[in-house]
Amino acid sequence: MKKPLFHILTAAAAGSALLCGCNNNGADAVITLKYANFPPSSTFPCVQMEHFAEVVAARTDGRVKIRTYPGGMLLDARAIYDGVINGTADIGNFAMSYQPGRFPVAEALDLPHFFPDAKTATRSLEAVMDEFNPPEFKDVVVLSVFTCPPAVLMTTRPVESVADIKGLSIRSSGTGAEIMKRLDAIPTSMPQSEVPEALQKNRVAGNLSSAEVLKDMNYAVSCPNVFAADLGVVSFAVVMNKRKFERLPEDLQKILRELGREQSHWTAAYVDNHAAESIAWGEKEHNVKVTIPSDADRAALRAAAAPLMEEYVERAKAKGVDGGKVLEVIKMMNDE
Image (cartoon, rainbow, N blue to C red; front, side):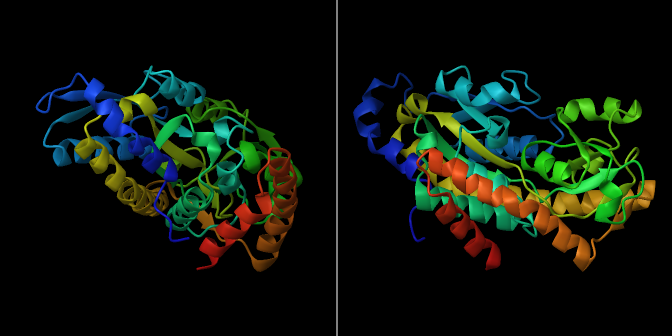
């Protein structure tokens, strides 16, 4: 596990000396990079984007300026990865779960491992990237990775046990939707941006998501009940167009390489703190009630999650990935 962070980034830098001579940017010229993101600007993936832009500007003494595009202004959620590859964006942040099957190694993080927080989940994602050097990222340069905190269930009506979930229409996606189905809820897929209207019109009775959206998306108003299930996380990667990276001067490449793990850890700490603050804000301002699952409920949640792990191993095997080994690395990091 003592391998450099992100082999992909290191490999991309290896050929830079050959390509830097082709760079039209002089040593004192300002290099502007377009950074595409998909959630609203107030949400943590965009907060980390703005933080990244500020740090890069400071550490490059203003030689690199990052122009940020939140809220799908440049590319929508499912188009960001390919948009970075083809150069529409120079940098992009995307969620792997939005493209099922395309990231057979990294998608293992989004399974319900019952992580205690984003810090642990992010460290686990870093370990997977270091250990397996996933070929699914061969067409880009990975700058950083991170996750949201584990998902809670926020609902319009009280949910005090797993039994209360039955029959509820819950906005959920990916592995979260699969667990809702196994708990006899009705999983409903839609972007976060559509959830407020769906709640208002009673098309859904709740949302399965990390807790920071209680405040960021104002869900505390319509969903004053939180069942702290600690289900799956959503994993994110910040990637850069490979050719654009290779054309940067070597000192600027070095700055971006060294910033990767620091940025990942900053993001995890920020969103963990923000999720806790959002729950406290919801309790104070909107009388949000938080229910901690009983031991029996936690056992029921784990039982519902277990088949997803087995299915992942088989699905990964079909793509030439040792899914069992990937899960072992994640378990080891989660148990530390």
